[in-house]
Image (cartoon, rainbow, N blue to C red; front, side):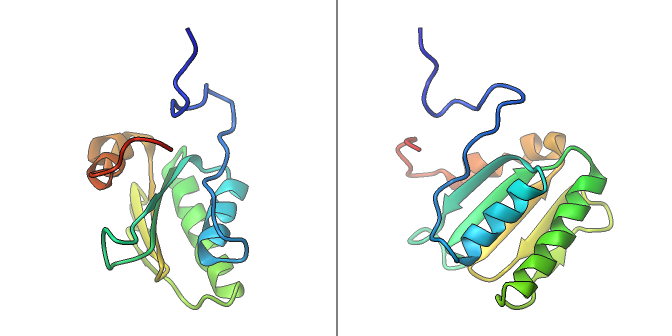
Length: 131
């Protein structure tokens, strides 16, 4: 029996980054999270679903310290990349940090908090389930 194609990678196996336009804010966000060893990076296209952003990116960090560091580094990289300033919410506790970068909204979680809120499921309405 072969595993499903959209099943999560085995522990320790890196999963490929979702596709994005080279040089875009979305690509910068995905690369930044990958560089900082974020876990389970998921990108949800919002075009046609919501006017808040074009993409929602969800990822996990192993600890509150890693979540906070990833958020701060991402904000700096977005600014250095010429995409302007970002708004960050939730840094003091860093269980769930929201980064609003305009066209891309990023949610960084500790794994337990991520599984509790399950944003992927909430925003997957109407999707066929294909990756």
